[in-house]
Length: 201
Length: 201
DNA sequence: CCATCTTATTGACACTTCGCCAATAGTGCT
DNA sequence: AGCACTATTGGCGAAGTGTCAATAAGATGG
Image (cartoon, rainbow over all chains, first blue to last red; front, side, top):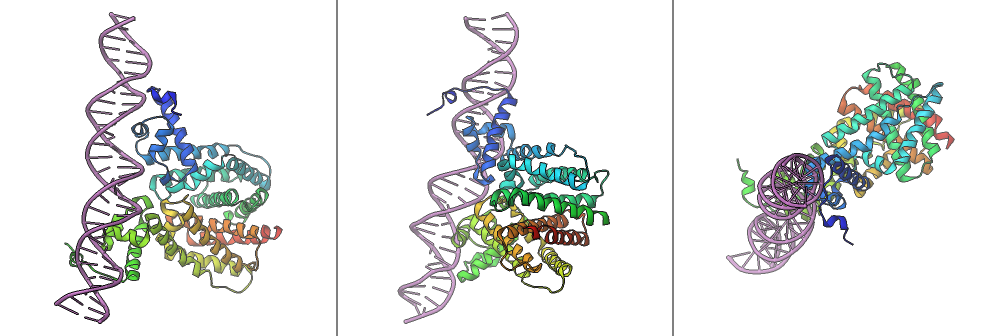
């Protein structure tokens, strides 16, 4: 039952060890809220003394921040793809791509955007806010208004990203909406914003 | 420096004591995330032994649940007011009322919907979900679709409530949008949903 | 192949917070 | 005044976290 590897101390390159601990932490924080994950759990599953976790990541919150950063970098790269065509097509494309990414990494993504038990903390909020900002910029680019957008426009787009996040959570956690319905809701909402709200400001 | 009242033990009716502790807890949880509030803080500010907090509310999470429940009951009653007129008027009315309530109780309300550091917890999520459900029902009633709504319709309306919450946070915390702009965004979004998404399903 | 040096890793200590419970002491009643 | 009820206290034990000197794994040089 006891792993043979744990019988003897094993020395790894700092980068490798850090990566290993991080992956274990991702698995834990992705499946249970912040308060229910102890650094002892992470250390045990990594086959490592608890002190080493602090040595590499500092405090527990710092470890969580590293985890959230990894979880949120996935959606960011997804928005780099720029579609062509008229507005409805581009909106369809960006919404579809968003739903693809979200459904593929559902558990970790839900945990990250839900800020599994650390919402309200200043640093965590900032990391999430930055990711939302990147997503909002991607949306603006997709609808053809990405060139030097005003702060107001960017703020409104952040609100739309909030709608997308909420709707995705509603979709994946409750399971009463179909993907088509979610897609329709997000697409028509975005079109309405672009046509009837953004131009005024 | 030392309060005279604390020199001598003071005996209160259970209801009164519970109410007093709860109000102190609301003030603390409303201004700081969950993890940064200790039951010792609450007990000290209430002029009471820490054990008494547990005696009245059980665990710390239970205390937080009681706080969130109080914070979220305010918006609920606000949605009971039913306006008359055509769709744009009714939408304007419900959005305006929502923004009134939110801005009036901004700090506590933001802390509650942001789940100040306890998101991901099952019980906390359920309390918030119930409040969102009530709000969604109010929105459906306001737009004249409140009679026996389908689960799909209710789910979509929960998404809209999510947009409203998110936008309100953007408005009150970042301060880049004006109230008029927030109002316009939420009103036209709701109208678009009612006219172009809800009918299909 | 052994001695030495670097540093990744450990284990324990101090501190904080939380839930629990027997002991204590207000407060009304006789 | 004395008594009974129970609101309230204070301390104990468990769990978690951050820190740091001590340890040993593995590379390096002779």
